[in-house]
Image (cartoon, rainbow, N blue to C red; front, side, top):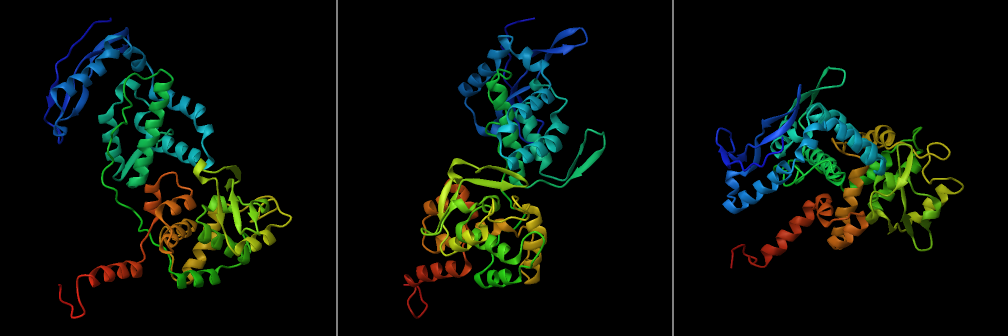
Length: 396
């Protein structure tokens, strides 16, 4: 069945975004064995203004494994098998939070669309079409055959889906199950639109919130307030705060060492190497040592076990915020991390210092967490205008 091919480069114009493509014959499993069938393979969009040389290079790159007969393997492997292999080999290496997110998105959004496809059927165009569909309200057929409705996914969810698909195909390349480029490469998600407005409380609102924190079965009010104050002072993630032990605190230096995190019943390493850090905690160091004396963890709901962050949100954080009128969708422990990163820079820290404090591996992530205070921005504008507008209000 092996045959050398050199298909012509064609243009498809009956679509919203015309693109170049080739139509080689590829081997596909049929009832009587492998059959040769034409497959449309895109090379790039017309509006990208690719040169003839670039199109030819892309074509040769695609045709090399086809002419070598290596596409037979890709045509025979169902994507569902690759996904299962990826789950078994790679997911156990992820943190509990990442593993939970990957499992959910593979099961609810990826397999319902690509589960029955073969690897050779999946290309950049089909992945782009899938992400476009996920960006609007949609439904998927589950394992039980029932249709489930899903709301439109936000930018970050689409970014995560693309990343998971890319990780699966990267593993396939490493395992020798995929020839050519990763089909997720260079896929654009579109303009980022936040589904929730990012807000942080002001100092007065934060004081009222702390005073309104109730005693609950999750944590006593004094302990819960210390959880919040630790996050506000250090910018730690909630899982990092709950994972603190007395041995992590140096009361003389006023610091805490972040070495682990606790998430929903599981102790694990920090999110990344950059997250392992020593942070100043000031006068809170003594309170942390006193509260955690004789316990495995400083913040415990029961002996040896910190609370679940979901219970902390449901029974402590949200009721207190609602009581003082500052609750909004998205308000929670992450708001205090965002507050720390923003206030730290207002206090004079450079973006690089804020990045280190937050444990971010990249500065652009710290930028996303930074919210400029309106009064500080107003002072910036007044200072700028004062240089060009004299006291009489007329431009010089």
